Image (tube, rainbow, N blue to C red; front, side, top):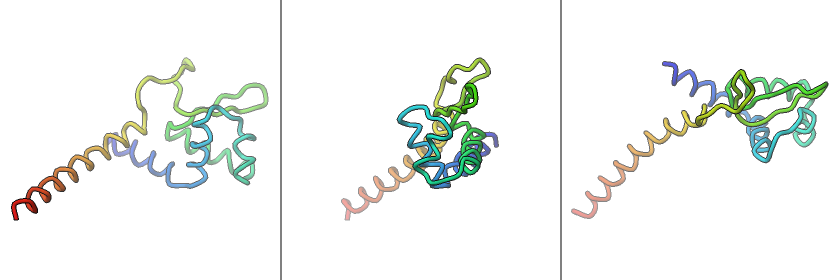
Length: 117
């Protein structure tokens, strides 16, 4: 059940194109809220809502430095260092991998069946 909650939260966070663009940008390195908002043509308030959803899904972490909120990929632990492990995207990958294996088995059986004919 817990795994499904993680998957639901992760897929929900990834379902919005703006949030995927935020993740793409953060894949190149940390950025402030303002830096993230500029190319997306979105208000700071709107961007903060998207970042909050990504943060709740543990895909992004934020840190306030002075008056600026900085964002980076991945969750942080209470001590502030990056959490070890694959996190929610690892859960998604594991879930998808089970489907990949099943479909590969089916394709292999189909291929074998066609060769026998």
